Length: 545
Image (tube, rainbow, N blue to C red):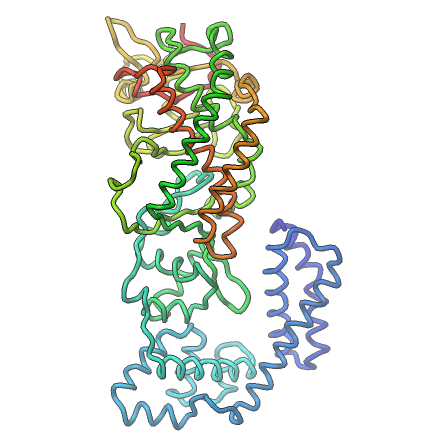
């Protein structure tokens, strides 16, 4: 459900939930504790649900389930001395007075506990505070204090007795690449910004396969919980971790582990699909733009070949099978910085790129990049909107960060004759020259980019639809791609990963299409000036004269 809708439900039912809790516990403090747990479970489950038919019945069932667990915890806390397998006060005292090695281990294990459990243990055993005093100072109920003592003692005993190895702590991971699927916010912060620290990367990775508490994450990383609590809070606030039931955290990120076998198998599927595109779709695209000048398009020096490079790439990524590609958008996470995207990471590989049976450099792209007058406004907005795709065939540097909306505004000023070489505008002019968006040649200057007065929507409407036979081919090959990839992802990521790999089939076929068209002579090689702005289209309110 949308967050706004869930918030309204919570406001509507919070008093009823507290009434339910008070009726069950007959105690204000206990009722507040129980109600807060119910509200947390209700919120967590609703935010993940699509629709709930009977909301009253649903919340009542959740309340009853939480109350049942609450009663069970109360009973265990009240009768804790009857349980075997926990560490008594005397056992803890014996450990730290008679065995220095175990005492050091005990101190280390306590540091891994979550903040509230660390405080409860230290107050009770080292500061000799009473349970009701701890409850008052920490603003929690006595029952909660009892439960944390019980749970922490069990955790400490389990860890000390097993003294297990912590694989990530001993061998921390560092992502080979970090990226995003979707759009970043106005401050251009994305995955690399939030996961620039090795600690952040390992926190997310530790909670990737299954949900873990702060204590479990700390133990796995071999880092004191105090050092990761703020980081966990930051990652949760910014959408890289989801807080789930039981005060545990689950990574909200698409993490891929590359393998030589899978990459080579994928490549064969991408090539087959690219061949189908070249045979069934590209001739339709070329035919539609043979008379491009009459349709409101500008190509430097009226070069049809240069225009087709950009039109073919755009068509493959922004027209062909778009309805199938739209599935991925429902998995985007809305970020507090204004971004809306899936965070991605690639784990270190155990093979050399040069050992692949194809050249990966030919097929590396920097996505379909869209630039408009505001980061989240309609893409068709005039006076300027632009699309660009970075591939092996261009000579641009700097990635998506260097693809600036301002460049297209400057070029629009140049087209309209408003950009001069006066001192106050010389920096704009120089940037366009350096980027290769303006070419100075034979004492003349011209805009070095495909430009159209059509809106992006009008342009897409001009592009041919995919034939039914190609749709069938895509469906079959998408199933193959998903099948060879899906097993590597944990359960909570599988649907997102499935949508992503279906999208990749079309996305990664684009460069194979360019490669095949170049080999077959349908596209001609580019000159040095064309390589600076190929696969770029500016949608403008004016064309160069």
